[in-house]
Length: 250
Image: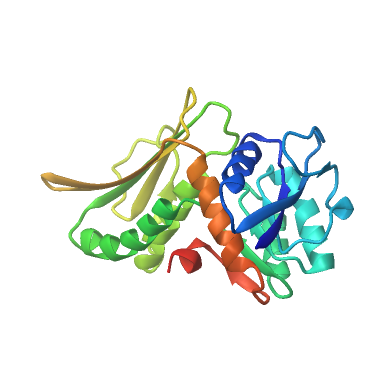
């Protein structure tokens, strides 16, 4: 049994995480942390991590400005952390890298098993299609409450493609400020926001007279909770280091 602390337990994803954990016999939420300490499930909710009992893993589903609390707690206690929050600042990302030297940290832009399988597939497909002259475009769609754009997942998809191409491509987020032909070595990334879209990502390779598209659609936030639970089980007991979902789905 893996005991976890759920950071951000009363947010939208925290609620889904709680429901998903209840149906998994291999994991128990021993405490939650949230600015709103209302108790919605059968575990105590605190305002800070320092008040929580000891656990095997901290799962973070908060917001970027709150992640510093997780990093400080894990630096002090050496508790492994699954970081699911996107939109971290450069300073926070540097702290995460430093933390991996003394603590097990799993960070992924998207906790979905399907998305992480897609990342693997793109690394194989991109070199073949790019060599054949295909242009690369990424479109991501999310609900109207999402704060960051492009999404962390869209950037992870772009990075997976670019790394397989020796990082020879530049990212293009906006074409409205200039009038010129598309550069062959660019990856266009566009963001759409509206309604209650959970998340949709498409990577399009457009060639002469043919288009190859890879798409992932999330119909429920439960897929991210399930991935986080798999990640926590994987991370429990691991030594210091930097891990991601590719290690979990390997």
